[in-house]
Amino acid sequence: MATIKDVAKLAGVSPAAVSRILNDDPGLSATTETKKRVIEAARELKYEKKRSVSKAAFTMGIVQWFSAEDEMRDSYYLMVRKGVEDYCLAHSFNVIRVFRTDNDYKENLAGVDGIVCIGKFSEEYIEDFKLMNNNVVFLDMPREDYNITSITMDFRCGVRRALDYLTSLGHERIAYIGGKEYINDTEPIYDERRETYIRYMKEHNRYKKEYMLENSFSTTSGYELCKKLLGCKTLPTAIFAASDAIAFGVMKAIKEAGYKIPGDISVVGFNNDEISEFTSPSLTTIDAPSYDMGQHGANLLYGMTNLNIETPLKIKIPCRLVIRESCGQAKG
Image (cartoon, rainbow, N blue to C red; front, side, top):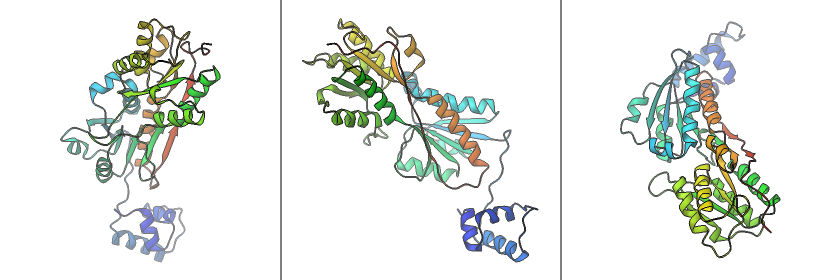
């Protein structure tokens, strides 16, 4: 599909001039010959001018990578979706929501003005979405290339802040309990939390393989993995959990084993779920504002539908440390 830049290149004028000519800007000073050249170039390339979409007529498609059951186990993606839907509700937008596993998701998304894709998608899905619609925003989809518009969390900075805080409290034996995710049955997802933990601990000469356990991002998984960790000959003095859901299970296992939090073992979570403030003790965690990411994504998508900007954006949202009661000075 031809872009405004293609027309400008063929006609030998600037993209701004093409936009103003095709929109019949009365304030533009251009010769009849220039206008004719632009119109002929647009016709030759079969360029279609983007329509301006009113709020009342706007329909936003939402594609979810997570299942409804997964959303209930870990509220991270639930809050992303809620952020998108609340934005649409506030602006009286229509919403069509589908799951990537739906057989008819393409048919259901036909005719929407833009698509918000929440989660991790394979290259095949990404190309499908780009072919279906010119306006697509990916939320929580880290990519090294710049071929898509995406908004992600700065997990690297968040993890380093958590580990810096634990180190400042004198902790050297810091364990990691995380989860594994897959785009499909065979393709693992790169987890910046995991890789940042490994790099940080190796930089400080404190990395121990036995202190690193992974299964799923669930409370049950955190509980089972922590019980296994507590069987180590030398216990860690702190545990970094890759999600609050995992941290809740970790805290239960520590208490059942007769240890105190943070007297014996400190715990840090990730996400800042609503319940983390009400655990006993209250959970120190990294705030990953997933609801805000949904709001930003919906706002960005709506803006894209009314602009002739072709350049993709890559946006990272900062994560902050929320200090509560689950961390203390390293014992001894």
